Image (tube, rainbow, N blue to C red; front, top):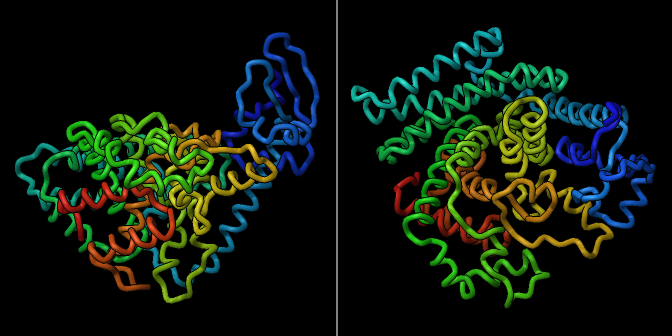
Length: 458
């Protein structure tokens, strides 16, 4: 294959925003027949007008390629626009920022010193996992501190490499990512044990000051525990069978408006969870957990934007998911799934109040394409989002629930009074499930059960 060509399939994963730019530029594709090797030059607009989904399909006969120099120019233009937006938001929010002293100190030290500090944090967690001399409360405190510290190291590192070329940036983040994933593995092994949940969450609430950092840690822990509860319900309590028994009465009508092209009488649980609802593999839970810890990493640069005294700025809110997605995907060696968790956790089933790349790309797909359909609500596979086969990605639907719950129950938030658990769940059901289909009804009801049975409420 020519070095100056790059496939549409690769472009799709690199940055979905490139494709609309190719359409605007009325580019020509190099089309190569996989069997005969025959090459043709065809207008991308002509192919798109004939089939709006051609660029999402993997055909057996033809592969599509674009000049790599053109992609480099488009990517640079997109990145410059993103950085300009981020710089403007950073300047506008500078006065209201109250970055922690720990963050400032980490900025000042060398990258290798941060790696050493992260290694020390890993050793600290591992030393208490099986220790009989460390109390539950002490373990909880250490867990909170190490989680917070790991997040800060990641953010400082990303802030430092954001202007480097992608390859150079990824190389600079290898050790941070490796150690962070080891730390999360150790932390989750502590969370797997039958610890005193109320003591742990007392520690989290006590340390909360309403800013992103504490929210990240609480959301990471609660989301992980929620996943474990989901798997227990699936494996030990016949959750799938219970859902099927009451699907028609309790859920069919609710989901029908999300995928209205499927006749209501034919709508099944398999249309909701593509491939059927089933336990989450252990290796996937590890990946999801890292995404949960880093999900708001695009927000840290203006950490107090919604906690300060200034009026709410929707631009700052909506930019953080995209910023986090872009930074993790392009500047780190973390899994693409982790980037997706950060980038898609405010999509809300495509609700008008949601925001993120996926919703925008879906809107593009639907323009002039009457045959465009999504046949499932939630997929276990990220590839189904890349091909627009599903409305959402499974870990995101877990995270959306916990993210909203933590935001409205945080006792440290200064911009609005926090809610107690009962009030918060009632509010979420009314505003995010019944009036607006934003969070998933089945997972939300399971979340309520999860809080009631585990005592993990505030």
